[in-house]
Length: 217
Image (cartoon, rainbow, N blue to C red; front, side, top):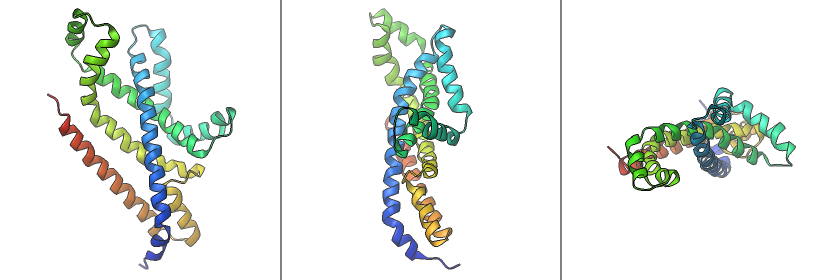
């Protein structure tokens, strides 16, 4: 097979630029998703079904529809109704809202895994509900949430490649650009795959380190 290294060399700066776009859009999507997910996860644990209902509907919608469809909805319909936004904004918004649905379940499971007796003991010491959640439940639950949150970030990192379809200059976008210019498939897509593999492996090792660092019994 005739492998053209010159294509990789020419597009390497663009692929690196796309890699950084991929990383920061994934980080931003995860951070915003964590903030929204915590709110939704707590809302889903409400005792009244009428309060719980909108949070359940949110989770069901974003977990039950394809991410690509959500991206098209936000890029071509929802966000244009509020103004003129760049494609990168559409990608980050979609990633954050989609991740929030999964992270909400992670938060809910993590919080509910803490023994109720600890909350009752904290209440008996005079803490209110917010203090119990902040000082007793969340610190312990967070340690148990590290593995699934890390996995969600890795999934989001790979899902960010969908941004290429709406012209976000991320990693796959430049791979497609090289393919379109030279009509070559192997060199651009192997380079993109290799960069994604390196990123996900680094994240996996970092996640394993954090699991050991915050290991709990």
